[in-house]
Image (cartoon, rainbow, N blue to C red; front, side):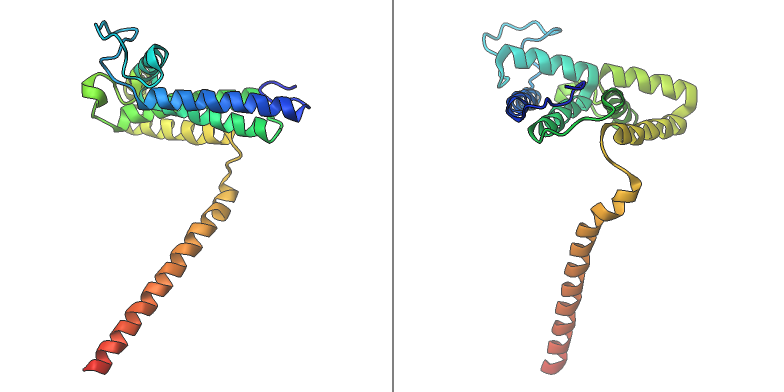
Length: 206
């Protein structure tokens, strides 16, 4: 078994995939049901039972994730689901170290981008959109490169992270867009044909 990769036993791979799927689902539910008044690392409350769907574990996890990473924490369950899919299909994960590096850059880059572009603070102003780490990185980049330079560097890191963590490539972009663009052209052609029929019908009525 390679680092992060599946084993030669497909049955064991399926078991690990199921565990990862439930882990990702648990992260998703805990983040989605976050409430600022739930018990957490930095909140003292007299509430007996947290409102988080995963109870105390979910409330503490969601608070820590949102505090550090903001909405960039949503990337975590997405990565877990992608890893589970690999294990379920027994696909070898090549260059696992670089993929982990890309995942880290993606999470931090997302938080930094949110701190650079989003000004509102969700959950009653308790959580910063990019989290504490995103705010620190955004402030550092602004001080070093100004707003434009900080945005360009963050965008570069995000694109680089996509290359590292997935099979994304610019050459495949045209293939991925071929389906939606074909559907859009078909709908546009039908709409133009419908308009022409309506125009001819009105002329005939006149």
